Length: 141
Image 1 (cartoon, helix red, strand yellow):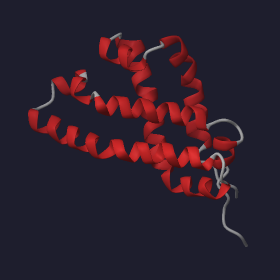
Image 2 (cartoon, rainbow, N blue to C red):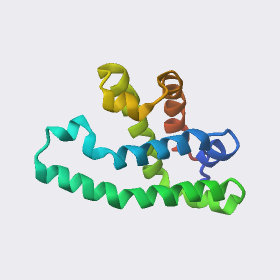
Image 3 (cartoon, helix red, strand yellow):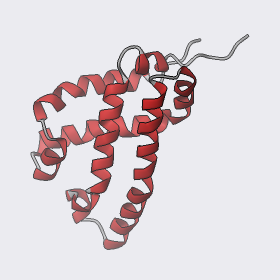
Image 4 (tube, one colour):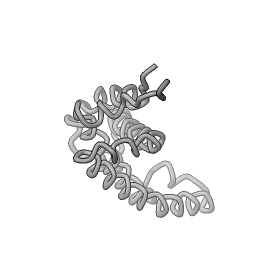
């Protein structure tokens, strides 16, 4: 009996899910690049802030690798299968974008509003993110 098939790959490639994933990864990169300006960190202890900044610096190259993987997978189905191992990272990027959109809406804090940019478009992305988070975790029975 063959193993389970990752249905999330169909969503990413054939249903255009890659668009919100790429958008979320780009947002995640921007968030990490500006993490020192985050209002959440302004109140954090200096030591904690330093650790988060170090983690951000380590994570940014992973985001660039992931973007490249996704772009390669759009033309090569074998590459698409490799993305299955990156589901947790993709979820993290989607969740970060989702949370920051909500923070921008709820708090109106300049940092989040600036980070998000077009709030009208971002509000529309909330439902797409929800669908993406559900679909990328789907496997056949």
